[in-house]
Structure formats: C-alpha cells, structure tokens
Length: 272
Image 1 (cartoon, one colour):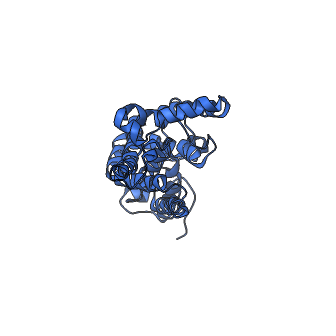
Image 2: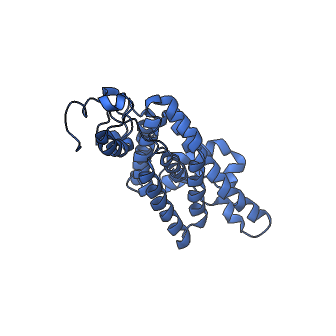
Image 3: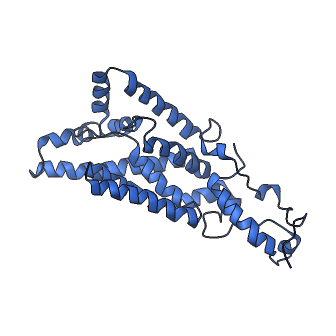
C-alpha cells in the first residue's frame, strides 16, 4: 500500500523534529560562545596583521612562534600565543574552516570540550613537528637557524576538530569529509612546500579521529535524545500509530530517516 500523507505520518513529537536552519552554521554569542569569542579575537589579530606596521607584525609573529627555541624557554606562553594568529588572513581556507567546523563541533559537544579538542591537536601536533627539528639540530643534521623556524596559526587545531567532527556525522558525510580534507593535506605534503607543517596537519587530523569515542560520549551526554545520529544507528523515526505499536511504517522508514540524516549536519535544533 503506497505511503499516504496525513496525520499519521506527520505526528512526530516536537522534540524529535529537525528543521533546516542554515544560519546555525555560524557562531552566535549564546549558542556557541567559545567559537564566537575566539573568532572575534582572530578577526582582531587579522586586522593588526593587515594594517599595522610590517616590522611590528613580524616582531609579534616571531614572539608568538612555537619554534624550538621558544618551546624550550616559554612553552606554555608560545603555545597559547601562536593560536591567536591566522596565517593567510581571515579568508584563508583554514580560517573559513575554523568558523564552520568549530561551530558545528561546539553545538554538539559544548564549548569547553571543543576547546579541549582544539588544544589537543594544536599542542600535540606542534610538539610532534618541532621536537624532531630540535633533535636534528642536536645531532648536526639541521642548521642552528632551524631552531628559530617561524611557526604560528590555528591550522593544527582546526584539522583536529575536523577529525573529531567527522565522528559525529552520518557515514555519507563522514567519509567524504575525511577523504576530501585528508586528500588536500596529502597533496600539500607531496608539494613539499612546507613539509613539517604538512606532516603536522595529518598528525592533528589523526588526533581528531582518535577522539571519536570521547566526542561521541560528550554528544550523548549533551543531547541524550540524539544518540544515534552519528550514523552508527538510525535516528528515531517519526512516530506514527504503526511505529508506536512496534510495527515500523513504510513512510517513516522511507522518508523520515534520510531527512533526519541530512539535517543532523546542522546540529540539534534545541538551541539557537
């Protein structure tokens, strides 16, 4: 019997419904305060980079660089300061990715946990790329100038958040995202323009993927009703008389699940 449109197919509880709201892709002060505030700080430092005296900008970047010399002297200070600048400005790919990826991750896991994922990728990938440089200088394989290699930006943290976010998406979004983003990083590595940074991007992406058990648990704690929306289970289908009696309706299986999978990209509709 063909699916019929009517009260039975439209009787899903209000709490289960998802609506397509594209503006939720952007950070807001109330919905995603961490991403919103961090984006404001990055916009300010990008303005300084674009309009301040070049000599001053170079001095600030050099003082914030997570090179080996600074990591030995003031590790905590430079690890935090280096994440206040964007290489390439606010229209660079990683800057745009920062806004959309961190917004989506924060809506699912919360601001503090998103900051943890970001810092985990930023710190571990920085150490994984700079420690070998220090060892190379120590054994004489690299010149002493490598100790002062300019290194700053948010790209390691963004790559980690991309990896973490992928674990919360449905499979038909998760694997294309990882394939496209990972492919871009591999192409950058093969170009050999900045191999240490390219290795760091791949390392931080792997760090983000390694957080899947944690971010899925955090999302389940934050939104208990959305537990299946990562794609490992189907999200709850729209309720109908047949569904509530234990017999799944053809309408709910054929219509509601794909739409719920698509709209899960935008996050829960409970907050704005």
